[in-house]
Every structure is written in structure tokens, then in C-alpha cells.
Length: 274
Image (cartoon, rainbow, N blue to C red):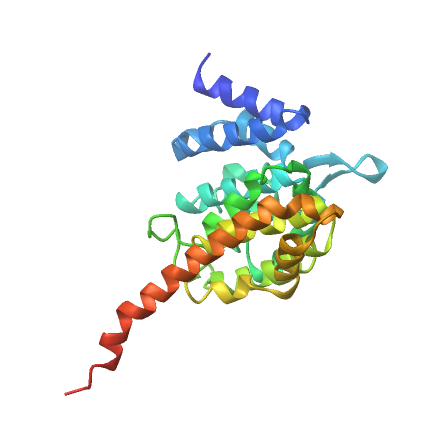
């Protein structure tokens, strides 16, 4: 089979097979990233199939066709949507006429899906992502890749960017909103699966974030989960203890890196101006 046929099959599985949905979503994203933009725009069947998998043309009241909003997506749909918008932005396809009406409006907008003011709309799919426990759902990797420097020091994106319509995007403000509303406000106050997810996200973030971003993640409810899981014995919270120890080790390692950066910068900062 050709790559096009494989992609169509992966999208079909992503749309209809709940058990294989996460695996199919990653396959769809990987194949899409390798697809030339002109071929993507010409592949009307793939575009239509991808749009349907993201909620375009769902049956509404009185036999009308409606479109799912961000809040109605599942975690896999949100993850694919983030990846597709990144692809469209990279190749300047957001305003391409061949895509209008076939892909969701929230995906074709010049404003990023992942933006501080829109985090509230992603609350439900991000809450549902805890069902992937004991693993962290791939949607979180996509979100963190957008907001944080890449591992190894390279930056995935600048702290401040401009959308096509001149709308400034502040990744640090988005991380703050995401953390306050979702991670600290919901996950760290929820079930054991959600508490575990909050600790896993903390591990990922503190091992990659900038020095200025670290205080955002040391939030009250997440720290309470960490401390209670370390100190509690003989209760239900004890199942989080291994994860909490791992998280503490990651935090200590991140703290050493921060201190080393401060130490290196000290002589320069104290050098008198001649």
C-alpha cells in the first residue's frame, strides 16, 4: 500500500477504534509531518477524513451538521488537532481555500489552539487524559513541546511570538494559565489517577523549563500531593509514593541546575562597570 493509503487507514482507525485510538493518533501525526504540504492540500479525501475525525460534520439537532468545539473533544483528538495546526502554521496553510469547510474552524484560525485564554476550553479533554494512567497521555507531550524549551537546550519556540494577525502569544502566560487551571486546580485535587498525572507533568516540566518558569510549577496543590504521598503510609495515597520519590529526585536535580546557572552568572553580574 502507498503512504496515502496507510494514512487513510490510520485516520480510519483513529476515528472508529477507541481501543487503538491513541496509537493510531500517533501514527497519523508521524505520517502527516512527513507529508509535503502541496500533496496534503490536494488529497481531498484525506483532508475530509481528518476533519471528520476531529468533529466536522457530526449530526446535530433536526438533521443539521455541526462541528465539535474544543471542549467536546477527547484527549486524542486534541493532541492530533495541536499537531495539525502546527503543521498548517509551519507551511502557511491556515488560509488555504481547499481546507475551508473540511477542517474545524478552531483549527484553521490564526490564533493558536494553545493560548492562555483558550485553556478553559481544553479543560474537559485534559481531565479525561488521566485515563491513560500509569502512562502520561501523548497530548501532554505535544503541549509541553509547544510551551517549553526542547530537551538538550534548543528552544521549540520563542517565549513571545506573533500570530498571523499580529496577536502576541506569550508561552509563559499560557503555561501559567494551564498550570493554575488544569494541573493545580483540577488534576492535583482529583482522583489518584489525576494526582499521579499532576506529578508526572511536574517531572516533565521541571526537567525542561526555564528558570523563570520553575516557580509556576511549584504550586500549592501539586506540592501538597507530593508531600502527602511521600509522608503517608498505610493509606490509599501510599500508591503514589514511588512516583512521588521519583518526582522529588527530578526536582532536586532541576534545582541543582538552577543553582549552577546562578553560580556561573555571579562573577559576570558583579563585575563593576568601567
